[in-house]
Length: 203
Image (cartoon, rainbow, N blue to C red; front, side):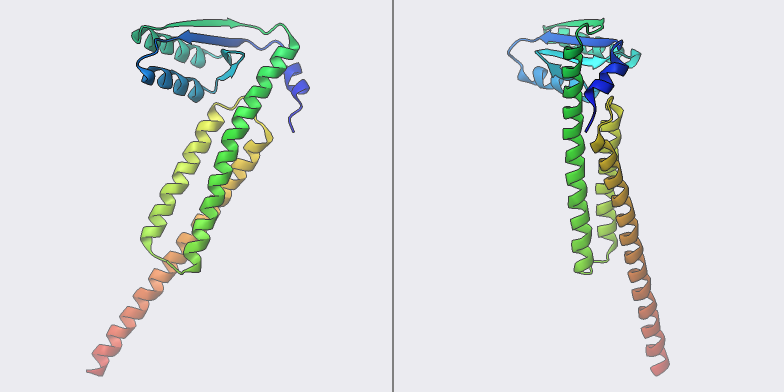
């Protein structure tokens, strides 16, 4: 569990960015686009206002987002400042924790699926390169996903460590599986050569 009081004590003088916007009802894709960009930044919606700790990079991205909103005939409001009431800052920080934990939990569950897939292929001895390639692509997706979540993670809740450990376990399991496939392929190749030699000798 995260001690919110401890986090807030360190963050009591934190500078925040607050963002709100309005858009016409149509096209709906504009609302979806803005929502996606805010989530990618790691912002959370708290009492109808989007909030995120201040940084030059986030400020730049939100300014760009306002330009995009204006292209859709909408309007955006961007404010930088401090949260004066401790209880409100605690609420926003808890929202950050919940949001990141939700994403880390998704990664953890996908890792569990990865474990089961490798176990299934080993169980049926499906030691072919196509499976190595397919599972390597899935592993790369997991690693990229984790990096994206870590980039927008400001609080670093406990599930971050769990998700990181799960992805590392995926890497280990994949390397072991790839080695098995290599050994299996090498053994088949060697056996085929021996059969060819025996066939030639028997003539």
